[in-house]
Length: 144
Image 1 (cartoon, rainbow, N blue to C red):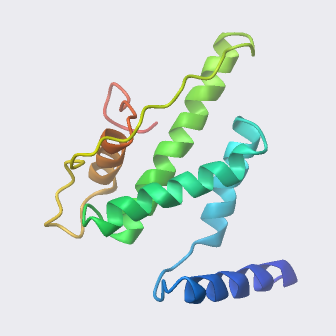
Image 2 (spheres, rainbow, N blue to C red; image 1 turned 90 degrees about the vertical axis):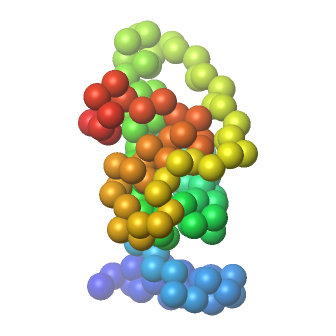
C-alpha cells in the first residue's frame, strides 16, 4: 500500500469518527474515480463539487430510509457519472461550445424507492435518486 493510500485511509477514519459516522465504509477509489470523471468531463473544480453533491444526495436517501447507505451511494454516483457522459456528448455534438443546463431542484416528496426492501436493486435506487434529484432516466431505463 502506498504512503498516499495510507494517509487517505487514516484521514477517512479520523473524519468519519469526528463526524460521528462510525460504521460508514468509504470506497476511496470510487470517490477519487468519480472526482476524476467530473474533473476531466466537466472542469477541474467540478470534482469536489460533484463528490459533495453525490454524498449529500446519498445521505438524504439513506437517512430517510429510501435506500441503504451502499445503494444510495452507488446510485447517486451512477447518476453523476451518467450526467458527465451526457455533458461530454452534448459538448461533442455542439463542437465543444454547448452551454450548461441549469439543474432542477430536488423534489420535497418521496422518491418512490421501496423502503421495505433493504436489498433494493441498484436500478431501483438509481431511478429513485433520479426522480428525487431531477434527472431523467435514459429511454431504455438503463444507465449505459
